[in-house]
View 1: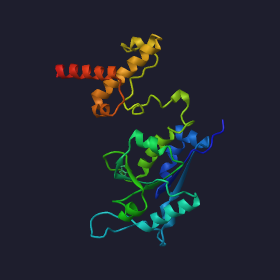
View 2: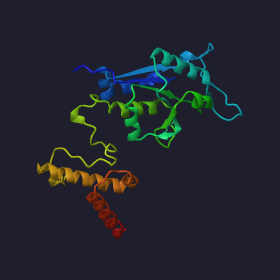
View 3: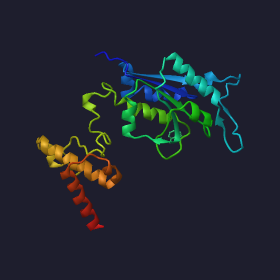
Length: 256
Ligand code: ADE
């Protein structure tokens, strides 16, 4: 089937080679091959002004490390904008540990755009004027520090690409993924039925789809309560499901 390009990622980085692996395997590679997704890599060094192609400099005020200079990043974003005829409303995302933590709803929101620009920071940081004047938002992939924004950008590309219709086949549907329901995913099993004395829950072999759905939903609730109870506050639960969670809580509290 022929698909139209649904999403173009424009990535600004000083290490475009880092993207070779992730873009050449699995779902992202297939989405690119199908023409659903385009990933355009732009080397920030190409926008450096001096003959050493330098993109960083010492921090004003002293201190350790280097800071990414504003000019090459400003120029790279301008050039991408013109080249790809991007409008003013295209998100320009700076990947940084100081950004808003990436969540499934944010990935879903990003998947509604046709173009996304991403700036991968490096070194000790990026000149603050990039934040003030170029980036429209800042994203973090978690509370830890990476050597740069490249791996974070790949994670955004992956999380967003799998939401684009046609990128993930129905056989790998994203509907049941953890977080897409606001809950963690239920336990999954495949053959064999018994492995090293460990059996697949009977209900999954029953062929009773309503019962299977009910079991899965309850296991999702159980797992979410055990591992990420804060997610339950935002999940869309029926009255019966709320009562089920309450019963689980009481059971847990009485055994502790
Ligand atoms: N760059 C360095 N660490 C990062 C993180 N946790 N998220 C996004 N970009 C980063």
